[in-house]
Length: 240
Length: 219
Image (cartoon, rainbow over all chains, first blue to last red; front, side, top):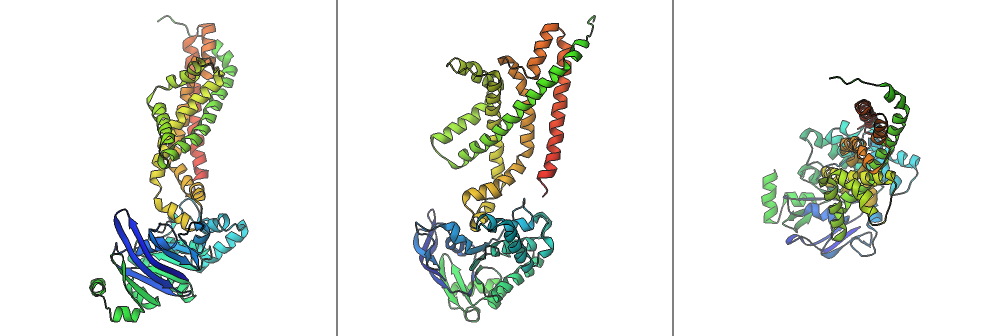
């Protein structure tokens, strides 16, 4: 499980996360909502150590993410991440995009890495695109490629950073479907998202962030049905 | 004009000239390989380091780009010579060209690194790659594509300025031409033919570069 205790994050003088406490259980799907700049993406980056923290702690399966002796490269294999800008590697084919990290990070032999990559690409519906370059893919396909790439490391957790925000509206659905599929398969997921429909249907819990504070966290029916915080009420009235 | 062209001596010397042009090509090619490796190093130092190492790298780039290539050649020849370090003409030209190539290519690489989104590096690290792996597998291959044409230009430039080598006694294409021209006083004829050889070499480099690009960059 992921245990976040009194997490503080600053960018210079800017206090981005102000004492976050959060536990995410194995198998749970947590959606994180809130306005831009509320710190929700930063939270993800603090979980896989792409950002340093100034105070508090993050434990993943008991390992202190920001601890001195922690090997972040080993740790990150267990924390798949999907970015808003899908970041497919343009110089590699679809198959190579997915097979590279299993080979050079997990140390699998070439054949095994390709096998896993192919499985994951079929999994996200890109089995017919193995030898294409990402430039030949739509945004939605590239984002599914990014999901397959993260899954090929066989992580226990998946972190989604606004995975659909940069997509054309008609492409959002296919990516959400893939995320839904993962949730159904029991993947532990933290999804920073602006898709309220997705948050409502798929999540076990939804967290609302406002200016670096987690103001509310509860099951979706409760959070959307009876929002307690004033900021959340305002936020929901705007996004509806 | 009562000048009579005499091409026969040039034609007789053609095998020597062609052999010398291979030397030109060789020294230019090796200096480009050095230039790429050192230019990459210089650009990474300037992007990621501070202090004396960065100053040295910057001084290198500034000197290579903003002083005449001829002076750089003289530095490695007569300059080092006056400190008692006597290099062969081949080494002088190779070092001077490599120094010059590295300075120019460092700036191209810097632009190339700027053109690859930072998020490519982040995405690589998020998969558990080390910084070294992220650079060598993801970032640098993309940079190489961006700087591919500038590298080709630099290769052409290296071939052409290697002709300065004759001033430190290097018998590459120009040096060899000068040698024969002064023996026969058929200066115009020799240099006219040599100009054609340079032209053909450059065209061959451009053609080869284009073919290689097709093989290297399929995306």
